[in-house]
Image 1: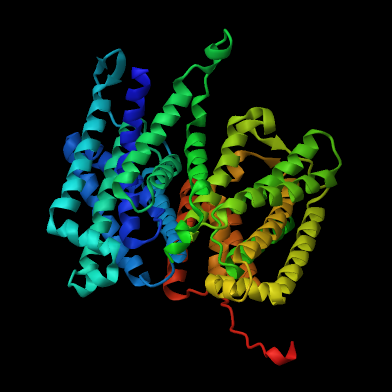
Image 2: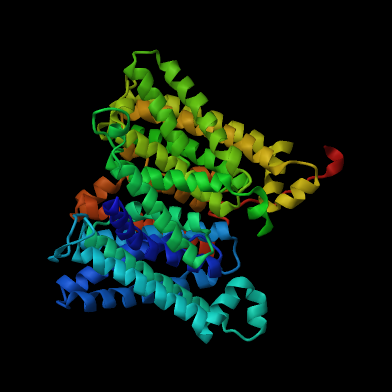
Length: 294
Length: 291
């Protein structure tokens, strides 16, 4: 049981940090940004390049990757989305697919399709009968720290207040002198940087490949949907809930409960749970909730 | 050379039909469906199932044409009342659930290995069928677009509230158009399976949905000529990737990546500079007295 909990927390930590960015950008930009998942992949590759090609130590390399991806996100906003502020959210969503595809092709062209791995030597640890690696601990620690920093930024600083004002009422915020353009750029930077951090940790735990986006996409959007598209920390809770259900389903030996043979849900069904949970939650939402927002 | 032309024409016809099914949903009604590959896949798997069980070919068509709208209703029934963001996620999720099921449960349809399907005796027969289906789809979509039903779909696209004020239930219209559109997409899928002769879950990924979207957005989502033109451009680029790779010595993988990147870039540019697509919708004046 303890092992299931630990596994769930580690997986949740990887997803949560990407999901938080989706929710943050949705709350301010008001569209589901599918390019966000691609920022995670771009960030992971940039961290990898900084580490293996430029020879930075890993923490510095991750920092380089994170900042660079944040800047790329700002650039994407400047070149594309800043010119499309007034089209429908559906339109922006479709454009974000275009951006995602472009970034994916760029990564695949530069780095090739083969899988790559970060060379790290994690130490095995155990706690209360559950086994994990030092790397797992670092991933969880980083996520917790990142969440605390984002919380402090949003709720303890003037910039955070401005961002929240923009999220709750853009027109009123602009009237009160909040520089919407700069705040939107900041939103892009933060969500891009967080996506890069999450993507790097995801790649550290598994491996780096261009089709990582499809592996991250569904659990991320499932987590965000569970938490509510525009609730920043709801996304983190959504990731935790989702991960718990996934790991419970996969790790528990259902076969022994009803017969003598061991049988549990195969690991491939992890994504299944994610998509299933997402669709279920969407279908069970209260009817008028969506319509009100228009 | 002649085989290549036949293959290209067949592919353009099949993907145009799929594009028209998206035109009905997105171009006319404004539904953002990111899982358009789902009914296509259902049609293809219908054909594969019929072949595997030794059933006559028309059963494959029937399986696809019945199953796809049924699944469509299942998806849209509860999703009809969601906003567009969520509707996009639900359709994307539904398509992925189908693909993951086919991938991870080999008992149903061979898992990742896929299944082989009965192929047309000659590629000319395949092309004839594809062109026939395309013509039927075009005539049907034109007729539907000009009918009062089609006009109401446009009203829903522009303003759901207005449609409701006129006493029409937008969800009901969206449901009907989804059933029709998914049925058409399933037929395209069945034909695709019989032309290619082999299907696997990898033929029905998010990227395939995106390629249809790309063609529709580039040509003009609200016009049928636009959808066909967009499909011609996208499919010609796709089928010639191999030749460009040979000619430029860049390697197939790199060239196909560059092609996808170019698609993404073109999509962005279309939205920035030509939002209505290459052939945009013209505004129509309808004189109420003549109706």
